[in-house]
Image 1 (tube, rainbow, N blue to C red):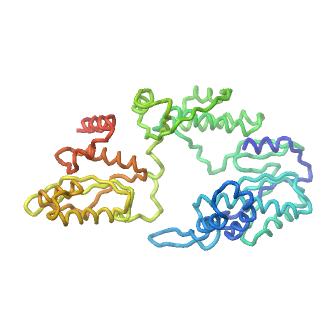
Image 2: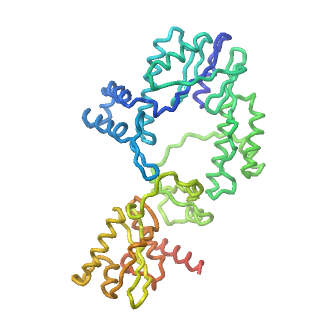
Length: 434
């Protein structure tokens, strides 16, 4: 938005001109896939400098990503998107942007009366043009392709909302004010939220800086009052709010150190102690803290549930039922990158052959051979899902280690590689809960 403001501040707007915004209706479903592929093919001479793939291979992959792979699942049924770029595909925004660029170049060239200025943000266009040319411009934009249609909003009383600004005309000058939609809740990160304090403070500072940066000084007094109201509603202390408002960053440009970032769940007080400790090499690694208290926990998942047996990259737990003469109740923890169904088939095969081969592959099979017990394969419990191989193995070891010794089927060697600090933390946690 700062670039948008800087670009328009020097523009003079005539009395006969109007400010108008144009917006594409349903951008991704509106973009014809074949059009996108054709436009990219026209620019192959530019693209080939950045890839070692042949043209045929490149466009086979592109076609698969945005045309052949438009399937989605809802309510246990698989559907295919009939038209447009696939929703959720990483390639769709890039292709859509290329189509929008071509649309603008083509339409602007054909217009009899050219706009004074045109800016684009994804599919939102801000245009200053003669009032008499507004309808012709809309017609020209809509004529580019039958599927791509625009809506239009004209300035009202010299004001036009565009993204999160209000663009105002003052005689022949353009001014900018901060804009909030009527539905805006004013909610940002709460001061007492379970996040590192530096993240909370930086979020508030960036909010203040953005509001004051995209609005002209004549609107600052009113906007500062809005800032105070919003931050107070989010439990920030008033003295801190005033410091944020008066703060003006003057950072000298520093060379960034090359570090490897590792993410870690933020735990109040413990995370602060960890960052100050000497457990890890601060010259090599930087810790990016994150919360596990996400919106996903509060809202129902609209995606179809995957059957337990079809899940993969999981840490799972199997309970031993014992036999007719005795109940067992001991637990085995394992992990697999394959579907759980496939891993259970391997376990069943091992147990089926337990009397033929005394050297068993797993502690579960050995336990069943030695005691003539049977696992409860009908009630497998998934403890966690993790796609990263190393993290998945670490989590498996931690879950095994967290079981009481009397309930554990796994071999002791299954946890030999668990980091000492993790074992110490889980044992401390367990003793506190007992």
